[in-house]
Length: 235
Image 1 (cartoon, one colour):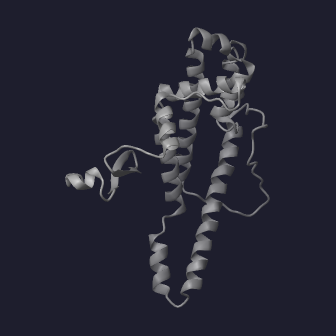
Image 2 (cartoon, one colour; image 1 turned 135 degrees about the horizontal axis):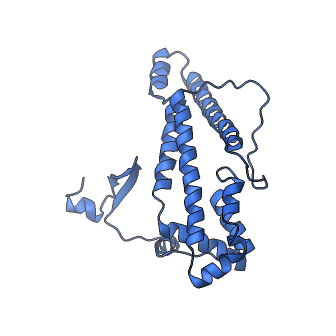
Image 3 (cartoon, helix red, strand yellow; image 1 turned 180 degrees about the vertical axis):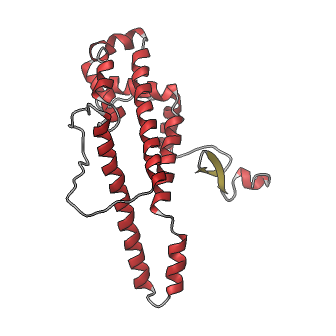
């Protein structure tokens, strides 16, 4: 039970970036009671822990979006450090500690995008140093760092809000099966179907390629010779 509970926490928040120590302590009964809960089919506490985690994640993503609304005004001078692996870091006791962590993470994300953009512009200058119009057009097409980060966090927030009870059950049961054998995972019917498709390398469909577009899914293209293209109805 202790191993399964720790595994569940690691799956949810392995980098100790969302939950507080008080959150974990609120569900300390699962440390020794998760095994009985699984045997008896009483997983309300495990689902409640996931609900607490999801609340923390949504709140954090909304916090990041609010920071972007205020505008990024970071100076990359100084001697700050950001721990990239926090698996062994103690749980934060106050929200202020996580605010500090996420401020650094946001700054790091902005720095990475800044470097990538400078590298891209440097390559363009090397390719054609005589064409200022090309440089201006390229810069105009590039999204600002704020816009890129906003799209990233909004996308993450949308995915988090689409979590279903089956997804939570997957996480709980995977944590349990991992205590028996690290190569054994629980698969929901949907995951099992996806696994079979990957193993067989075949999928029966209508021949349409789908692509996420914000909160919606759109048909990006039709497979040549596929049923959808032959029917001539879907565009």
